[in-house]
Length: 312
Picture 1: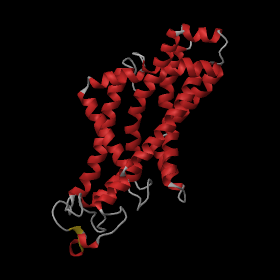
Picture 2: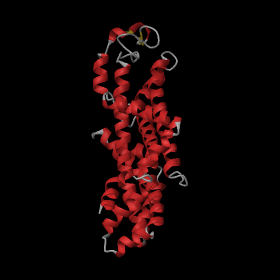
Picture 3: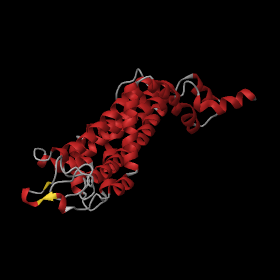
Picture 4: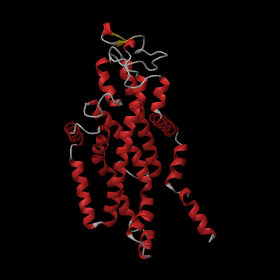
């Protein structure tokens, strides 16, 4: 009885559990720790965006005409794009909006869309992959053909078309749904393959013979076995989601002004890259560091949790 209680209370922290393996593996990789710190920094920035912009003293949609020169096409006054004690990262040309406030609020919008779309992709992909791999037969055939059909669409073109047609809707919610719609087949294929290798393991057969329902077998025996690859591939999906949101906003079919996003800011800064390079560099650097950090973190987790797995 004592042995059973000990096993139950320590199951989540078992030496071979995905979370324990991830922590141990990341500690041995300095690049992964740096990437994790960068991810944590931008996530905290997104969560505290209203507080940070209040500390800076400017709202993201607040104009400051005194910070730009109307006789020079609205270029910021002062060096490095108008960086000063009042505007920590300078201001936008023409409008004079505070760049720091827009960058931190842009982090909130961009990461919200990326994380929400990733959640949809992971939930839908894991559900479809586990169902296809465990039940097989017609279920596997239907779901596999649906994966192939979704992957056959030119996703970026279709996203642009959908975002252009749907105008009077919540753009953030629409982007989450549209991006999530095309992202689930990749992780579904990974989970399907993993489930196929697990469904005839001894402990799964034992649970089935013992009278456990399919739902109990899936949730108690199969899902813990695919948790490692799912954790690893989730972190590899996030940078793609961030880049997709930035690309759609850059093309003018994503988040609409005055709501800031990094992709939208980069698109607006292109016209000023030679006269005000700071305006272009700040959101570009934020986007680059976030995508790079998630990519490095995802690569490290994949190597630790699923060393024989390929990319989705």
